[in-house]
Length: 543
Image (cartoon, rainbow, N blue to C red; front, side, top):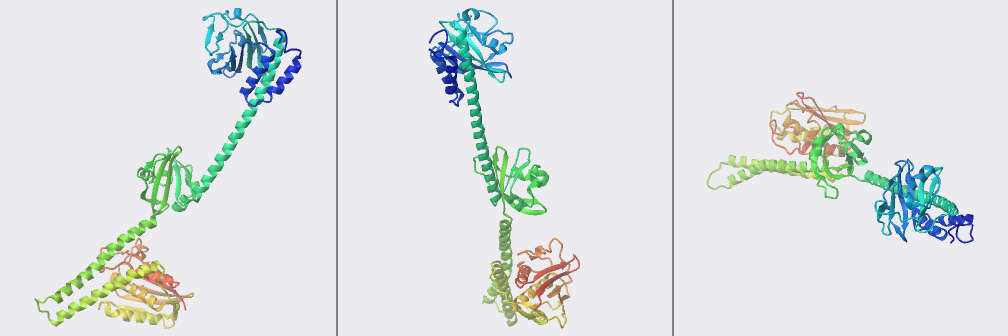
């Protein structure tokens, strides 16, 4: 090309049109710089090119693209330069004035103290002028890059040999304008792609969070997240069901405000670090007015500690029942078996003479204790069958007066002579719907309980109302405390555990009686005031 103007015979508009078309095809700012440099080399000779950006927020000029002595250098090798608002320095002059500049006396200008000048070598080494020697550049053109009237950068070309002309400056200015527009477009495209990628990532993250939330709601274990301040940020549906505490009540609040004993509980729950295996621990928890046994596991996360728990109250109760069963049955079997064993050993002795009446007494003891062993075994087996739903129950008319009378007569030989039983059955009471044998079993258990734990006389009363027959068995004993009134129907529970008022028992009689009543379509309730006796009421459908 000629040093005077442009590439060959082509006019400036033609060159700029081609540059706009070429530069607009690149969607990466770095590719725009490279293509701009290639186009510039076709029309203007140069030994170096520097593309800088300017940010008025910090008044710093930063290198974006640099080529020197045939090599593209790393822009990071050139440090940011502060804008010289006094007009010193060639780049600062362009930024402050907003006008292009042409210098054919760069070596002389670099000697002035009002600016900062560098020589940049082929390997990117930076040498300050004039301290390290004279400038290697003879001529330079610098033009501003503008956006909406503001200067946002500077592009400069340098020549080590020949000067530049005003015509070349005009062409260079036009090319830089095309480059600036292409870079802005590329950055807009780049930002759009970034936003689209961010939006896609946000949608994916939202979908993942939604899926995770759905999983958390679907799992059967309660899950909650507590931050370092003890504030709850997650409380899933299972946590609501297990504890009875609704999520809106606890989310955003300190858990200790909802569960006062939480700080003490948290100290007893081992927290595994992220990636480690959590160690579960089972603890009793008083919450929402009830007592639960919960198995906790905890893992530390970025947002706090994630706790997972499940309700093991039933398992705990089952374990307690097993323990009670072993203790109760062991105790109840020990006494009759010891009596049977002692009586049998006495009868087998041949070194002593036993009169006939003593031998008869020992034999009766063996029979009595064997019957007691049989009763204990029958109660345990019946309880097991009730729990499995294997007890058949008939539904037929049962005359209430007849079954009460028959039950009392069957029990009378086994009752202490001092025990008085009063029967008050209206003659028109009619029949109840149920199973004769099971109703009798219920009455036997109630009468046995009244005789053991209450005081005479024991009264049996029956009434009929609204299709229901009620049979009440009342004693005149000390009554049952309010805290024991519901528990007496639990398996193995006895309101007199020290056996102060009565001999031993399995603690299964009232449980069996209530379960049998329920299976016949009825119910068994207790009415008692401490010190005023106890009344057990069986309700059965009227036949």
